[in-house]
Length: 258
Image (cartoon, rainbow, N blue to C red; front, side, top):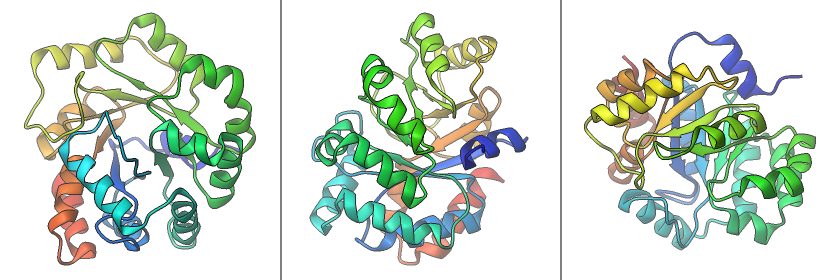
């Protein structure tokens, strides 16, 4: 049976919107409310960030949300518990995204088992080495119905992209620039050339474009090349100042995809 992510990509023709936010932010128990609000507003999948004390690939916005969430008391076991709650009401695919360190501390096989049982569909671990995944962990993820997504960037070689495509069975995360996360106002010509190159590679997996998606223009631009786009920092920024999460999420998503 295909998992929710595979079904989404197989059955949806419109550009897909994936929204990233940090578990336990702005408040510890906001994780479930945000997921439900995103589904209601029209997001196609959610990426829930596992906070970590040293998020090296992230810009100031997501770094700060990690810090706040950890101070709020979020932990990986609590995130899995929150996902179980989310699954009672939310049907869109759920991805957990984070660094390898907390997952290693939890135990990779145990994490795969517990995440699958909680209703997680996919995992993004940007610092998971390909060879290690293939040799040591792939079976645990496969056995628990979890699709692992790898990141590629403009500097990733074609050979590595092909290898990632071969190892993946959900989607590929195409980072728009070799930089940290953060909202940008548009894409440079070199980035557009990179997207075009990816499109021409005819990969077996769809790709979503992330880093720098912040508004309707960047979402539309990215969606001309990939299956859709991932928004993170702009959404986390909005949450930081929100006085009414349900309402503000709806406005944010509608403005992005309209």
